Length: 310
Image: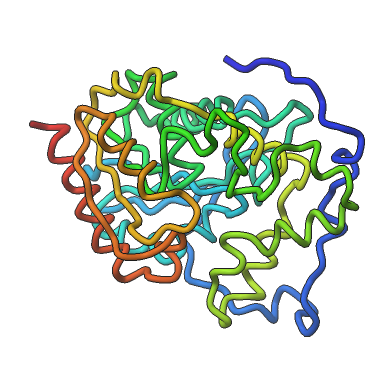
């Protein structure tokens, strides 16, 4: 289901992890304070291997696959959600292509490939059906998992996301602050990386987790990261999202400064099966307001699962 893509401009080929700047005072990984994370194992997918985190949950628990946002990793996005989610559900998470420990490819980054990776991961561990839980960019990937593999998806939980992130009139894309990949040509690779490292999840961490968060981001493939931002800008599900026929919960982040409230509402109103939940927080709700967010997310997941058996 994957297509070969054209390569990026030569400048972007220069972007690699070696230019990531580590903050002064963080001299070695063993000095970092790390959150309590679930166990991880390497699993083989058709395009390479990924590191899968898993909490088995109670006996016969429904599997929830967590799909993280752009510039994050699964751990950065969900480190405060893993354990409370795992008390009730089987929780699975891995990094998307180009992010953290995710797959690397010379092909241009596509959200469709990320969606196919979700199913490939499920195949690798013998998991038939599951609920996809998508946050921000992960919400776009979740929608694509349903569209491309409908028979595998029990339901969806979509958070801080939309049917599109950029309007048809060359609107400035909030995720990038750039109108397209061509705009980075005036920056050096190190400047691009520093700018991206300051965005979203890395300027929404607490001081106590800052060195660990920077280490997490240092694992990104920054060429693929820029391509991912462009892919987010191209994403649009308006033409088919009304066909969704599985139980869906939409968690609306009411103070979101990245995905406008109007677009989140449009997503909810476009899905006939959707139930809405709201959390009084911004785009970083799962990190900066975790207690509040987790309560709402657990309700959204429970509602989705209950409706799968109705």
